Length: 499
Ligand code: CS2
Image (cartoon, rainbow, N blue to C red; front, side, top):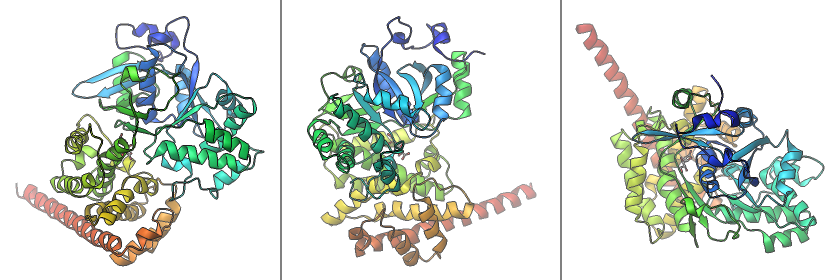
């Protein structure tokens, strides 16, 4: 069977939606560089840009992996083409053609740098996950971060997104080329402003004039991005091959819901994103808080508590009535009261729609995947709501349960000998190794991790007490569920023996 590629694309005509611009003679040129071509990017920004390209413009994407070769090896033989499967009541398939090439920064450094310094590159978007920004707990660039230290010495290839972009901007500045517009598409509070400050801070270490130029010229909008995009699996590959009659090395699947809100400060010269559903807003922060607090916070709570209770996917966890009641109370009592929703958004309806999305039986979203990078996600999706509620004298008990469950999750992964996916994994596992199962002792060890918990929080008595009581309550619940499961298994064995 043939592979999906430029050569076989036309054979799909009439079978499913195709990127017609990839069949035309005058194909769009590259105008966007994207850092971090993971599944979310390919289901979200690349999808929107694919639709925008139907309206014309030189907005093809050069995707860049900072280190991993996997996506490049999968998509380059396919000329960047791949299948997007939208899993709803019915599954629909479409071919996405916005990615023109996939480069690897470590192997193709000169090509990547040429793309970043070309005047035709007007946008750099990124999904590099929270850890990719190398920020400290104050949300500023961590100048002591070993990789930032590496990139500040100029006689080498930059290994961070911040270092790479700052160096490319320096070349553009020296050659009087306007800076590209940078767009963070990560679940970071205040993402665009933090990205901009990080780039200016990096530049200021070596060239104050460059930093000043960026201060004047660099556009970096805040954004809110949303679509549930589980990792690709072999079942998807088989379904796609059956649906399109070609082999696709790396198709992507996601739910039908997709949303992109961008701060309305982009240059007029932009892809036709608005024509295909992207929302421009004067202030993104309320949308960002609504999404981080009403989707991502319950997501992380389901991930850690659901995993401890023996569930595998979000859908499975949403069948657990006690767990669902817990996150519903978390949302109603502690999250919705913690922020001012956008005027056009009813937080109760928004949350109900999110819970319905979590119950999509077609989406197999692994709790263990959502559990990745807890040290980076808790400060974005749990701690700010806790800090707001403490300041306002509101409850934090349910929010504290997410942290306690995260601690217990780390201990369980250590006991299982399972990999802990987290940039602070070594430090977290070292703490887990010192835990004794006594709540006050164990919680104190985890809260002492300054890279995650600011002192103002870890020394707040109400906060510490709430996490300790949650740690105890979850430990008891997990033990009870395990005992009930064993009792049921014994009863079933006796029953089957009696029959
Ligand atoms: C999830 C997010 O993995 C996670 O942390 O909570 O990737 C979530 O699926 C997206 O933010 C949904 O838009």
